[in-house]
Image (cartoon, rainbow, N blue to C red):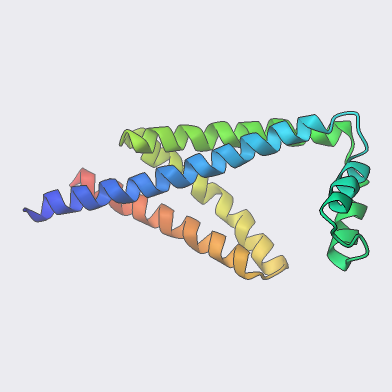
Length: 157
């Protein structure tokens, strides 16, 4: 098998992984958008507190207390904004995933531009508060962008 065919086959598998990842992110954001809409005209903090009680989670936990305090600031306007934003990003991720699945050049470029445009915010968040999850997200996104740039350049030669 020629090196070019091996490279194409390998590139196809990697694109499938990236597309699958985009589909998962899109599905999660759709769930978030609809979940936010389900809280319209409700006291979000009280609803979450009820769920935590049902799951027997200690409401006096430091992290749970901080979450509940922040949720008291969330009202209908914020829920609508969160829902629209989540649906918009879901549409972007699902478009990227579909295009990558069908190996479309435009999807590779869209993914490069969209993913790299959000990386400065990821760096800012990482500097503001370093966590392993934030670092991992940044590294995965950087790897995706670099790989797609490599793939696009390979196709041009």
